[in-house]
Image 1 (cartoon, rainbow, N blue to C red):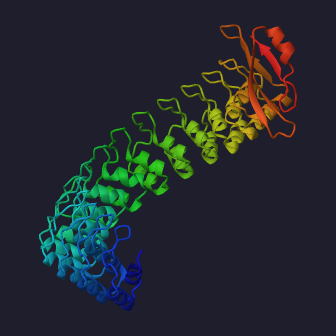
Image 2: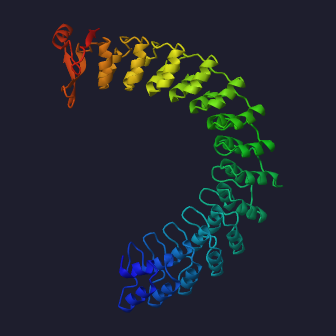
Image 3: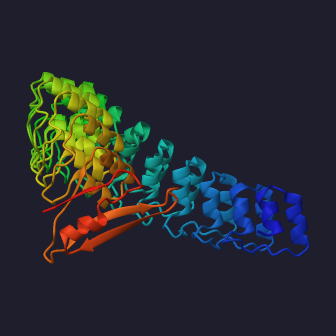
Length: 513
């Protein structure tokens, strides 16, 4: 940055004047920025005039394609906007994003700048790289008075961007009620849909703007409250999904259909249950929403609430006769979902209402196995206290203990051992819990299992080779290595390598089959 740029940026007019008189280059650049641009952003009006009177180029662009006029419009300096235009600044020049000075003025809210640029015949319907016009920018920013100026200047009210959204939709998304009202009064269409078939009502509902939602529905335009977008979702579903209770109440008042399903078979109740707003769920149930309705994956509202840990919602759903032991297409029940995520309050509630604690998924896993896999200690304690079978096996012959070992959850391993878990149980992969500990290099857990004489179980492969994976370490535990010991004779193997010391602790017991 040159001295002239610094003086221009930090409002020192006299130094700027001195530097120019002494031959400073007024068009020197710093990352594309000139002294004129710095002045347009933060400098003094008289400094801007001084630079232009000394041949500063007004239409040169920075690395983002912005001119001094765009910088002035963006930073809310109407006098500088006028000065630049009067000295030849091109009003319809655009930056690399396709944005013009009028768009920046509309977005930043300078009413006088918008009015002036429109009077200077700036293109009010020009679009940026996203297809947005100055009118859309103004609506998204909530500057209502700029909207009338743009429309009076010829802006097309129902023009759409690349996503198919018009100015009204942008106002609805951002919740700018004043902008919305102006557009409605100027006959903006509430029936238009974007590329995803979302209407202004759907956008307003999704973002929780209840005043706009009610205004649309009570208008004489007869908007379809049950219009579905490309995903099959309605305004009610989206309001429920994001927990907008005021919007839900308004939509129900205008007869929104609670039984409609999206493309995946999900209802408003399922979205509400997942979101966790008890009041929302209650409202839908009081309107006779089907509590046991399932989507295409056979997942119901109780499963969604259980997975998210929404304890109060689970309680309400059970009160309305939700089925606690139903399975989805993967064989997962509400208890599986709650246990997998460690929501022990929900687990406790489900067990209180007689949820089957040893119910198996399609892969054979129980709720306890999921809790052990993810390391949810409190959930494990709760399930075992309620009598969950700690030695149950899944489709791979694995137990809860094995999952705790594989995922290195030492506290759970210790808990299961103390509760009587079978440490020598062999999976269909011909491995014991201790085998998994060695295989996954979980030294602390392997040591723990060694102390209770847990077996390391191995089989001979097709070449009659026996394999044992071991750890070796220095006594200071500063170095460690992982090796595989192979031999063809089990007797020789046990003679040579049993006992195998791990951190110089208790010897491994090796079995062959």
